[in-house]
Image (cartoon, rainbow over all chains, first blue to last red; front, side, top):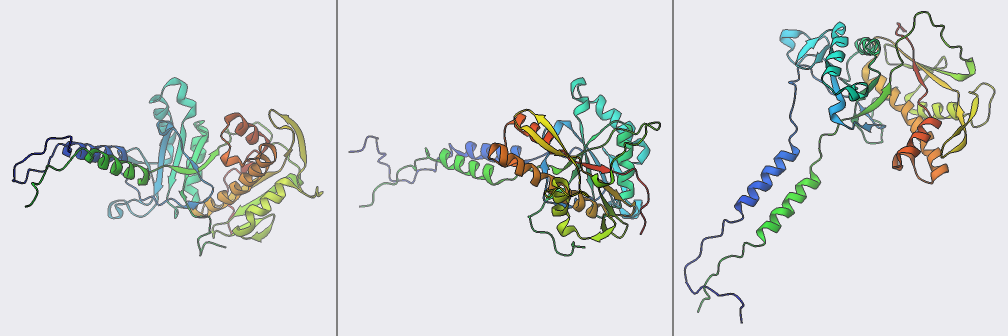
Length: 161
Length: 189
């Protein structure tokens, strides 16, 4: 004997849509969680090199990015590697300004903890990177991170010199 | 006689939804920023004398503009750089031409031998960034292996699995990252 009253009508009842909001909410949460807002539009093409001994960058709020790579719009800007700070191209001399601005944007207590993440394309020559590093030293921004992708433990072929 | 079609029980729909949600949560990889962390030396004081370091305590690593590697004046390959660095820093056979050790008392670890060895890394302005990272990667690998060994000896667990922040600090102190990058200049061919 059933505990529930069974409906005696012969018609097919409509499928309950009561859980439709749940599904929609689920989708919503999914996208909310996985979407990361892109704060800047990339102007340079950056394909970071692979490395095995990588560490995770914790505390994203304490990370500032310096992008170096060939411009995406090669017709307009040529193929020479450029530095991108926030939303525009910059030259080496404006790095110190950038560091000061990034410090100003943080709390007093966090100013010395900022990590500068160098997102550099793998084909960039070291000259420009060295210049940026020297500027960072001058600005006393000593915590840096070379952004790399995690590679499998095996070495890529063609890279053994 | 056919039984009347009852309303489909939607009570378990929520469970299915949660199941899907959890599936996606688990399988989605967040875009995590990873990289090799380094500390730059503070700006040079133009009046300060460069510190004197004994020849035996330096391992010279040079990368030229053609991405060729030279270690201690001889051409070398990336494949055994980590191993060489590790042997250099630990000096397992107490050789005369390899780095000295100093003994220091460190919390949680007791008296440990700390290598005085320094790796002097020089690169040309024309070196590719990829090559530079590969070299940095190999050097980091050597340091990480040494940290793993020490942590395994002292705490019975590898360094990268070590959770205790104070233990990690102690290991970091005992095995520093001894990379010194030269002031920029052209290495050339």
